[in-house]
Image (cartoon, rainbow, N blue to C red; front, side):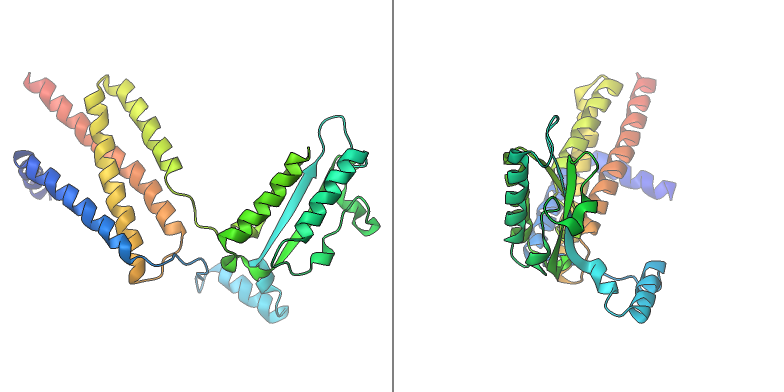
Length: 270
């Protein structure tokens, strides 16, 4: 194996312009494959796992309850500014307006069930003892895998309207689970941090840039090929995130190792 790797490395070194051209062609070819891409799937199951067995048992003992885990829902948490309370006139009006906007969202399972905890005795337990924090449950009539980006954006706009009225409004829940992960920003940040570290370690911009360039090519080709392969098979949205995370780490690590060995050999020969 070492002899084969040596021959490959030697060939790449002696024909470096050809190898660079081949990598560029491969990158564009992989990018072209994304034109055939289909949407990623978000409803995969893993038969035989403990999670799958638990879901099956839940459906057997409590029919229909297992599906509740897949229903899009959110818990909206509201807090008043320091020095104010929920029953202050301005805060109470802002909370009531927020509840009304939540009730007006599309695809809700039961809009009338969304009530203001401050004015609903049955929901008194949802208000803390200081009357500064409360929460509202929002349940949709769709599975989170069927919720589109427009529905999520409308929900976020309602949350922002509460913030504009002076409240601190945050939310969590399965409504966000069906949205594909955002790509690009975190990867760019990772490359940037890696470049800074290597510039300090190598004390050379050229030596630090080479691993970054090879990593960009490797991750770019891998992500493009994975995206294009959705034409032939169903892939979960997490596959792209995992590939980019592992790709950045491994590609920089190995190119850094090669660069370090190359510089060591140069120093020995000088």
